[in-house]
Structures are given as structure tokens and as C-alpha cells.
Length: 314
Image (cartoon, rainbow, N blue to C red; front, side):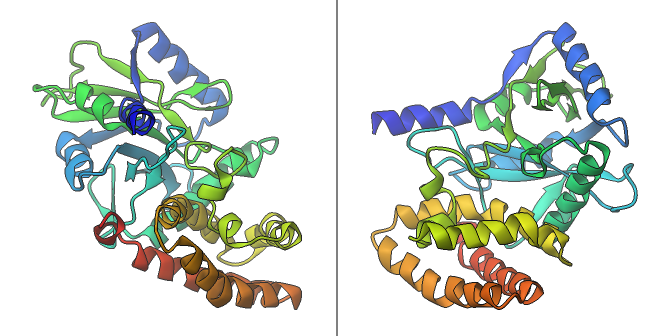
């Protein structure tokens, strides 16, 4: 219990103050990574507060990146994704699944499916402009803990300025409080967010069996290789494939961890394997890759509906 509390508290505290010089350095670095579109977003304080308080299990907010128009790099949009932290051994976070949708930086509401599409547009644009980057490792978003965000939401704060920055090999945004006149307050700059991936558990960490639903349900390494081959060599090239890729890694960490904490874990995983994975496997073996993508889509929609946040922690 003591270890668990320590890790949860750590996730709540992700994000630290930095100097103005560091702010300028991160901001200037970003232009070498992506010199297209907006680099600054203004978010009303009330939008952030609502996303932090709608559920007692919110550990912070993952700010995720998208493009509204696939052909327009100037159509950047910022999504606010409330996250929990169920890990016992890391500060990894899981996006909470909300049937009512998620806010963008202007307060508009979008469904998970709409967000997955716009995220795929953003990632493809970054990949096109940076061909040497590994598609799977491109920063999809950044997480700030609840306590750190509350430290920025000081009494005179009416807005948050979210500015893209870049550090080493990932996006490192900076947030700053603004007053009602959009003026900076107290020279507070906050960085040291956690990038996604790896904080959104896209693979390659010690808790893989607890963050990837397929890894949990499938016992054969050869069978897992079949799905990985499809993911890496077919899915992204198919119609609708990129958004399914984004959606899977959006929903999988939370659902997998909830299943692992359930007393009926083995039964749930076996049913998932028989009802969802087995038909999908047969489509792959027959080379019906587009049909497999459609089956994956139906499975993801069903999972998102089943694990809506109101049912998650009962």
C-alpha cells in the first residue's frame, strides 16, 4: 500500500517550475522539430478545472495533439484527456474513457473516434516532415499531474498559455498562467511533463502484460508476432488504419489494468480471446487485412463503450 501511494502521488506531481531562460530554449528548439502551424494555445482555467475534478480518480491531464485538416498543418488542435494512474510500479497513466467526449483547447467536445482521426493526421504530418523519426515514438501528447496543474491555477489566473517546446528527442511543452487581460502572472513557467509515449504505454516497458490487452490475452509468442506484423506492415497503410492504431493505444492501458485488478481476470481475458481475437486472427491468416481493420474497429468501439469511466472504478 505504501509503494502504491508513493507512485500515485508521483503521477499527481508530474511537472515542475523552470526558469524563463529554459522556457526560451525549449521554445526555440521546437522550431527545429516542427516549424508549421500554431505553437501556442490559450485555454480557459475553467476547462482545465472541470477536467481535473469530474472524477475522483483523475491524476492529471494528458494534452494530446491533432490536426483538424489532414492537408493543413496550420489546423493544430490540443485535446485535454483526463487520466488515472493505476500502476503499482511506475508513473504510467491511463486515459479515462468518457462517452460524452473530450474537450479541445477551446472547449469544444469531440468523441474518442474523432480525436483518433485528428491525432493520426498530426502524426502523419510530423512523420512526413521528419522521415527519420520512428512512427511509434513520435510524441502524441504530454501529461501534467493534478497537483502541478493546480499550482499553476493560482487565484488571479483566468487562462493557461500552453506553448510547444522541444527537449532531446520529444516535445516538452511549457504552461504559464495568464490573468484576465492575458498578461503573464508571476513569471511561473512549468515543464518536466511526461511525454506520450512512453507514458501512454505504447510498448517496450516492464509492465507490458498489464498495459497491452492483446499481450495479456494471447499466450503464444508466434501468434503475437502475427498481430505485430499486421500492425507494423499493413494497418497504417489501410483505409482508417492510422486512427485505429491511435485508438488502440488510447484505450488499451486502462482496460488492461482494470482487467488485471479484477477477480475474474482469467475469465474476462479468455472470453476476449475467443470472441474478439480469434475471429480477427482468422481474417489475418486469410489475408483479409481490410476486413481485419473493420473487425478491430468494432472491437475498440465495444471496449470504449463497456469501460466508460462511470463503470471503471466501481
